[in-house]
Image 1 (cartoon, helix red, strand yellow):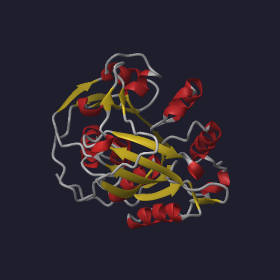
Image 2 (cartoon, one colour):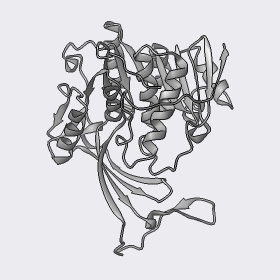
Image 3 (tube, rainbow, N blue to C red):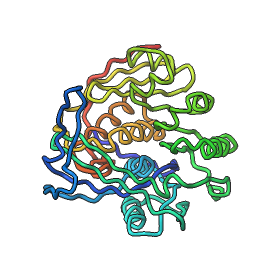
Image 4 (spheres, rainbow, N blue to C red):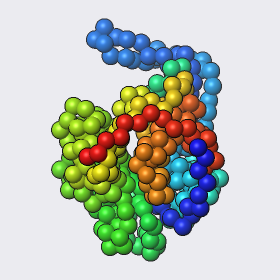
Length: 327
């Protein structure tokens, strides 16, 4: 099925991290199993190790989401912070290639742009060395929105900065803006603060382990049904085991979109949550939102980097088996 719709009357503002990613590829990064069952990567101190490739990309949940929205024809803006350096310029260039509006991006004079070094094993698993930099050292004031009134705000991890989150939520409430959120680990650590904000969301997207930190339930269906009492749209993922979504009328269970070789899992969660949000923002029904999100995530893991596989509006997306029940 091809989707060709004029969607640029809908504006989505993404808020959160922007980072430069450098991927180091090599069999040397294949994890080994320790006696205690843990998987580890080891390098002899002082040794020189050969690798098989280097790939530069850009990431950060908010910029990854921005590219999903832009490639689906939605008018897209990004609000975040970068440093005055080469990595910051690379991030802006990547966003501009997809016509993302970066007029709200701030530049830090105290910190460099966020940077991640990703050790990529042949099976797609990765270990990440991360410098958060400017992406986690900023405040947002109401004036930083420059009176922009998007239809949607897409929030990823704010590194547990609830002062920023509360400013964003207050601005959204004041201007009747819908919020979609994919919380990060640091938000989940402050569970009680996060749970106070969740009922103000229109979309909550999380993986199974994350959702179990907030809601009771052993299965995705149980978790989604419980969370759906707080939020209109809820979607929970469980990697290759699929996803479950609900909209207070229906609950949709999906398996794997396609069984593709996994090259790199970086950005898979961002691709799913932003893909789901993009379709709901574009007025699509729940089943198609789950299908597109699954396709977007599947495409992303088949390429190196969080943005290379993000689908364009003319991508050929096939239907997938879905179990749809009334709530």
